Length: 384
Image (cartoon, rainbow, N blue to C red; front, side):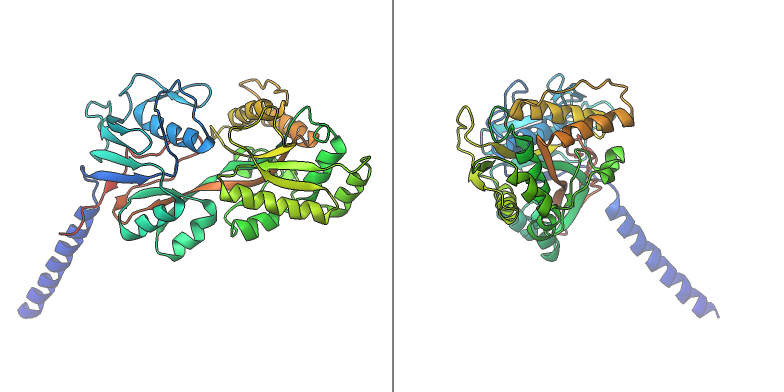
């Protein structure tokens, strides 16, 4: 009996020791460098500067969220340099930036000692580096999410927060024709774009806000109506043609534009998809262009206001003021007015997809408008 008791206690002791080791290895630890790879190329981190393209603007905003502790009314970050969780330790324009933890941060410093951000890394290289353990964090194009998972990469996905839409250019005869705008909107098969181009990593969009935001997305139809589109197009005199401009540097944007051209042709609509020249001519040669817009806030009113500003700058759509205290009904009515004008044609919603290395711990996908939450991320110590 004593022998059995001793054996039992020995087994329990070993088990508890092993469990303790596992638990201690999972406790947050300080130290290490978080290796981040991005596709954008940044030439300046000056808050007053104007990023050259949407990817650069997005990456700049992410880094600013680590450097500053205040967000301005337009969704950008500001404050006193070094007031955030990190400060710039090394900067090489267009290549990389190293951020060091702010030791005097109120509330305690971040767990990692530093963040090394490599710029200009193509999506395929970012994915490969995650697989090989050469990177700890990288954003992955939504259409690559399934492939990344199949290749064993840890994937984290946000709520749908990036709107892909078409914006008609005011002052162009065909763009100012209400029948032409509605015909094109009715011809588009959004579900096919999501299923075949995005590999189901997205949602069809009929409105300007996702369902989780204002709860009214279901009120906007997303199914195509080719017969209705054909009838509307037949009411236009002459043989008009729509030119759809897309970002030549964005393979997803090009694929979506080419799919829309197929839908338009099936509905009898004359449309050509063409890359937007860099620098863009003024006035633009295209009648409608695709845009990708990330929500600057989880609040539906703030997100819609920021979208309106973009629609105004690109298509000349007059923004309508929304009070800070706007109700859900007021937000919906404004959203409905924009969509019913067909000057903006919502296409689909994308989530932000993040690839994580094996040693990254306590990562949580940020909410819309939030930057990378690297303050709480810590790195598992690699085995010796």
